[in-house]
Image 1: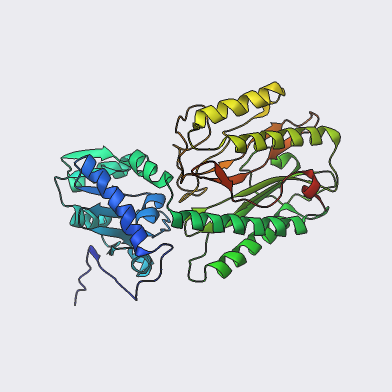
Image 2 (image 1 turned 30 degrees about the vertical axis):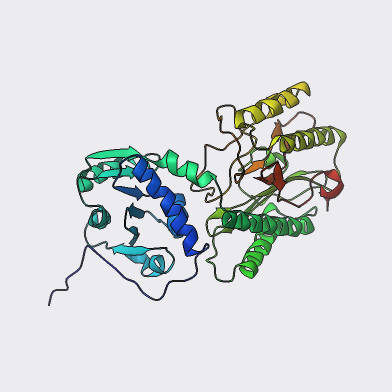
Length: 403
């Protein structure tokens, strides 16, 4: 007897579970996506990035080398997932789900074509499709017209709903919990990895307490010391902390794909005068920058003013990257709302409902007085008449010279 093995099928195993947001929230997001389709006379959207699939359906995939998709038409919303995940994508998505099998190459695209059809006008994410997958899209869907809708979807994601802001606020609170756990763990003789684990464990426990029905993954800490503070994204090492070391505390709770962050400069036991001068100057830039975040301000305009502030203090040459960025469905290994970053080349105007960080960083090279990386980071929600700082862990030498 020969077993008939399908190219794709529906494996709706178990019941739907509560997603990070109510069904009405996802329907509102899909209505916005369908407005994009309508505006550009498109028949379907084939979304392939983790951030867009999670934003519109609630399903955050684990790729492990396999492709995933969300297909949205005027009538349908269907996630496309690999057989290795069985029924989990169905349980964790808003809408329908189709599972593709490994029995034959390109069953993924056959599953997508079963929803889209051929010869249609299709929107996709050009910044996510590889050259290979783009060629397969053209081969299997034979679109009469294609369009990159990644910028339009990013613009939609930049404006947060009240439910999103509630989740981001909870994430900021969780990051504070991690910060306090790290502060307790800092002492001369401890390793970076030991301190980082204390912060991570505290945050994961707090997320589980606040969100008992969620899936838990990807929460992490970058805790750096000494020379290892020079880069914002330097991995944790086994270096042992020494008295007088500069430290960089970086807590990153992940709640259902939503990233938040807490970043603080610290010192072990004592801080020397040269380091204190740089630290206090960066704090002044941080506070000045936060005062600029309000409706009507442009990202490039805010950046220019902070640049001038640091230049007046002969410190601008030590700046290494932009002063802040958007928050939402993003992570260190997927997604970014690049249209809302505090950089010279971004002219986006701040509006109520946007969420953005202020995080100036100065890196003083090894061998110079005050060597190390200095960074403070708060998350602010743009309101009708200003901004609300939702980060509450204290910054500055009075609280963060520890151990």
